[in-house]
Image 1 (cartoon, one colour):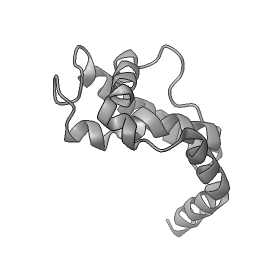
Image 2 (cartoon, helix red, strand yellow):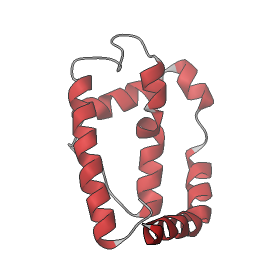
Image 3 (tube, helix red, strand yellow):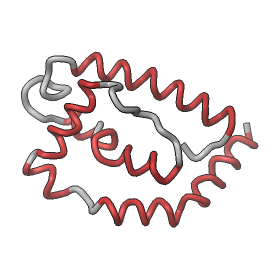
Image 4 (cartoon, helix red, strand yellow):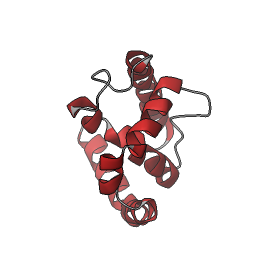
Length: 116
């Protein structure tokens, strides 16, 4: 997300392909493990809560309206779970943190690409 131009477009395409796979796996299920939230849901929590923040700060839209309906439903269910909700950071604070560090992330990605 911290790249630009063709690298960013390639990243977006690859990510959308992966999101489609996850969406397919969730169809008809409450969670990645079936009916109860589990480790796989915890591992995917970035998609449920943080992805929207990262999209906003980076200026990249990976999940458009109407895309990935099962994944969107899962994210809503996951973030509304009472136990999960207690530990989610404030969205405004997340936006401020990533916005303040955006140039640092972009610089790190540019340096990594140059080394390749």
